[in-house]
Length: 167
Figure (cartoon, one colour):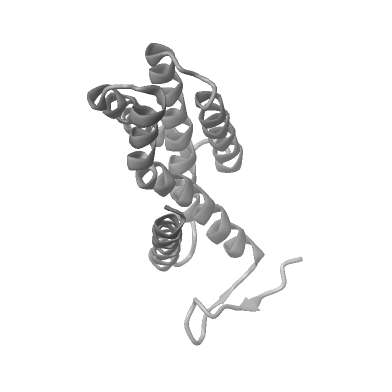
């Protein structure tokens, strides 16, 4: 179970055990969720304007509510994440974010959508805080952060390219 594996990411003499791989994959998932929020914001605004007939300023406010939720979570939840179970916090954050994202597909009222997108931001921010705190416990946290952020950016670039071909 604690078998050591030579990592193609860790350099010539370093090895990662299963715990570090779990941190790498979990951190990647958490940061990808956060990057998706920023990456699909223009799409959300476009859908709200074209699909629901919302004004551009109102659609921008809906997306800004989600970003505000992420920021509020960083301010108020971030300091406590290190003392709590990072895994449970990350799972809770992901479930809240996914549930709010799915719920927002069914809502057409501006005020309700604003609140649901704020809750989605709170969930995303919670997952990001837990992912960051978990990855910070790694032996080579700086290297792990670099791989996670590079991988998340590559996924976002692939989505942009795929989105361009789907139009």
